[in-house]
Picture 1 (cartoon, rainbow, N blue to C red):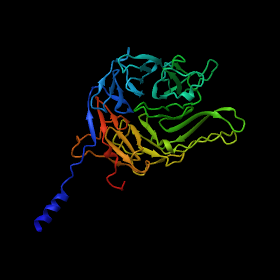
Picture 2 (picture 1 turned 90 degrees about the vertical axis):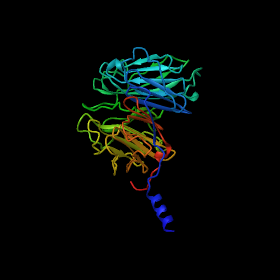
Picture 3 (picture 1 turned 45 degrees about the vertical axis):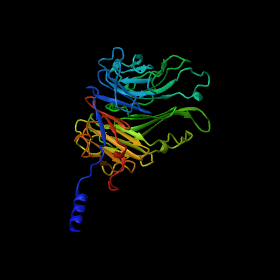
Picture 4 (picture 1 turned 90 degrees about the horizontal axis):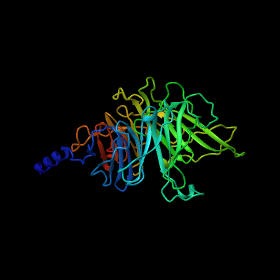
Length: 402
């Protein structure tokens, strides 16, 4: 009996052989910042030196795509894919180094769609989606039309030929491509989102732009979330543009600090309210989590995350992530938020109020939780060609304590 009790005690004290949290690959040496999981085993990634990668088997093998024309030195920081054959990729850089390319043949060939029209501009993020038949009442395209938007840093943009505004504003332009009904079109930038000196967005992980509706755009600057929306007033039904800002209390004392990523729980977004001239703009409520910090001091965990808790006001997290974080995402299956950065990975199960580290298991590499730039669950990408596939069990909390 004593022997049996001793064996039982030793068994209980032994560390559990947990499943690895990450499957890590390095199919390239390029630094990766773009990742988009299409589903059904299809995902695309992008990075420096014109690098684009594609998988059709859930990450078992990654295909190195043909480099787009004259893109050998471009940094592809954003990618949006729609199936195994169709994707658009955005490069970030000053002036004409910000470009958008398209492939429809599984990245064998690429077409240059648009080049940044502003010499002092810099594209930060891209979002795109297939156009639904109901959105094409006058012409049904024989090909899958794609609509989207591009966010860029402050510059003097001209929204039309009569625009005399000379105040720098954020670049926010919509586009429509791949339609048999019309040519690929990049519309003029909205010039209503003005910017103070020193204010910018970060092109760290293609996650500072969100589009909850066809004419609704949410964008994160280094210190606030801006909701830009076109609609109609009530009761006059005049066409109006509303701009509403929500302060995010992350540090912004230096140019390397601020908000680098935000994510939204989709079903939490408040329905739009009729705009009344007497009341002014109304910021929509939602569960929103924003992360960031200081990328030049990644171990500083001061004010690196904030949340709204279903409101339209941000407050700092009660328990912070372990340092600077460049990307955040929401997993609806487990109702868990995950954030990643150069020195670690953290999860939250209370909508961003508290964060707990996700340390590697004894079956992971010692740095499996580190060196990540961007997320599109279950994938993460990072420097030196690093790609990780997250085990779903990693999002399940080990305890109820923060």
